[in-house]
Amino acid sequence: MTASDIINALAPLVPNASFEEASSVDFATIYVPAPRLVETCRALRDADGLRFTTIIEITAADYLPRQPRFEVVYHLLSISRRARVRLKVRVGEGDALPTVQGIWKGAGWLEREVWDMFGIVFDGHPDLRRLLMPEDWEGHPARKDYPVQIHKTAQTYEPLEVSENEFRANIERDRVKRAH
Figure 1 (cartoon, one colour):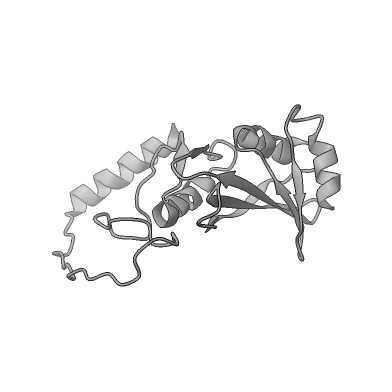
Figure 2 (cartoon, rainbow, N blue to C red):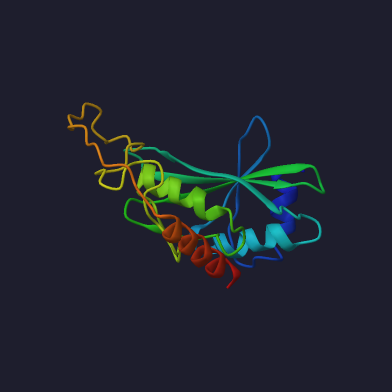
């Protein structure tokens, strides 16, 4: 499935969206306008001719000093069609993207990673917090303007001790929370 095929399939499903075909050496790559991201992803997942039901990765690239500065990259897989597509969304410094967690639940972790490393905010994300870096870390280390030579004193913490009752209560709370 080529990028042109996918764009032609998306055009009637996402009216007034301007998709761009991007060059790629491996699989179809399409630029998607940020305001139409969720609608585009839903069409890619639900349309009979597409069925990109699996999100594989969300990452980003920092093109400082170019404007818009970032590109957020989504890799999707259609198992039934044995096809992949790469979506790219241009994002300016301080701009936000809508979360796609409502389409693919697993996107929540991937969006947290992008926020943690690049500082790109995903509007509507229910739990946007540090994933890879410690909670007290300052900045976003995958940005091109992040200082490479950081002098930070090592911090040690006491090991977390949870009683058996607290552990069981936490498990039950999480189970109930997921059921809703």
